[in-house]
Structures are given as structure tokens and as C-alpha cells.
Length: 126
Image 1: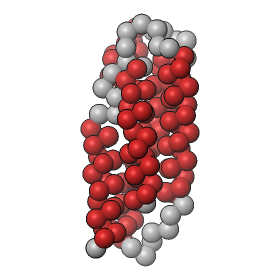
Image 2: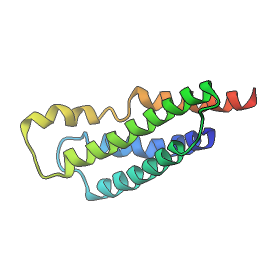
Image 3: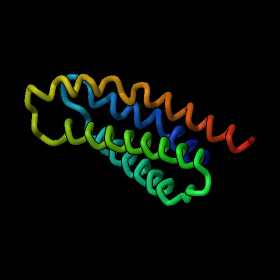
């Protein structure tokens, strides 16, 4: 799971930048939609990879697995929601607030991914 968290972390800067790009005022370039899709597929693959990991015999590992799945799910949903909001063609005023929030990218959850990856590495070394 540490390796998956590491791969998720390696993708995170691009995912964050893609989400932030959706928070700008005006037209978002179509290439952002492509990047969102690539990142979404990548995080979905990582999610399913972690989902397949068996951890029932180790309660601590079960908790770490749950935390990693939660973070990966958050990334997937942020990427999907950013794309849906910006590229759906539904430009309604009530979405402006949500679009401005996208300018914050993944926020503190990005830091959570780094902490979890570090915890998984250190737990493996113990």
C-alpha cells in the first residue's frame, strides 16, 4: 500500500493543478478536461488496487487501508466533480461558489496523502 500511496502522491501535483485550473474565471481550455480524465482514471485504478488488498488479519493495516481508500476516493470525486462542473455546459450562477472553491485544488487532503504515505513506509520498516 505504501507503493500505491507513493504513486498517488506522484500524480497529485498534476491532479491538483487540473482541479485548480477549473476554478478560474472564464473559459477553461479543453486540455484541462483531458488531464482531468487521465488523472481520474489513474486514481480510480489505484483505488481498485488498494480495494483488493486483504488486511483482515492486521487491524492497524485495515485502518490504514481504509484511510488510503478514503483519500483516493476524495481525489477521484474532486477530479470528476471539477470536470462535471466546468465542462457540463450548465453555466448557472449557483455554481459560481463551487467553481471558486475549485481554485483551492485538493486542499489539506493533499497533505494527508503525504502523511499517510510516510506512515505506511515507517510501519513497513518496523
